[in-house]
Length: 388
Image (cartoon, rainbow, N blue to C red; front, side, top):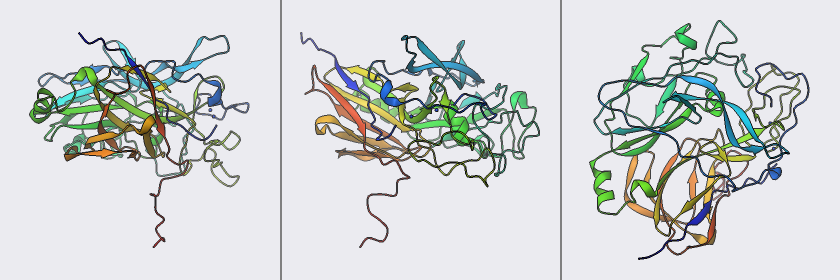
């Protein structure tokens, strides 16, 4: 019998950068110091595996959005875990941030109540000078969930103007219903849900209001049975995000005039701007996968299926694996491709998904690193528009 030794695939996504904010909605009384990513040990913690929900019949799933504290891999000087304030969805007695993975089937409707139980105020600075969810209570946190890539009837689509505050005390002008229906009239695909609130999507998603939604079908089952796709025990979902942290281990989002800008983009709030203000883009210098900073995962020398999501605000990922290990892309945003495509690098723009196979058969007892070579600026392609 062949004895397989686990191989450790380290999920490093390099950022050529350096460093975040106390989770409050008013400007901190004292200047914030940003956490240096070089002070954090990488590849020490296991990749978190999101809880899976398998809906049955016409019973609706209730997923209340609530505040929580999660461990993102940070420790204090004494080695004690630092708990970071975030938002997530409660299910089975626990708040999950990012949210749980919902498993759906083609043609079988799923009903979800995305209940808003966020007490406010917001964790991050809210610029109220822009086109925004028009809530009367400035401390209330509006939310609405969109199924990104789903075939969804309009009342359940998560329109940015269909927002609602805690316990539906205030609702947006196109709010229609509390329980969303997803009919799943589509092929197998890796899709995802995320907050979609007008003027606040960037903040609510950054806080943790997102998760995977995997649609399966008979064709996917056949591919697995015929061993053209790995089984579920050799499949991972991986949501990749970038973040900033304050020196006390809390998520930080720039926006206040007297607080530090991102050390990656350096864009700061100017004197004549509202305080707080929204900025053109967001770049962090910590990479998280499923909510954990620079995790690792152990695999055996086999082919694995990686269902990848770029859930970053602005950062486009250009992913490569050590030793020129290829990706074989079998699916994209809309489901499976007509034919597999072998790639040396994989490009994922924000909100984009890729379903890829990676063969680790030749790497027994070795360590590989998944690296990001994407730029620290908004991605405009590899060729300038004015080039011949």
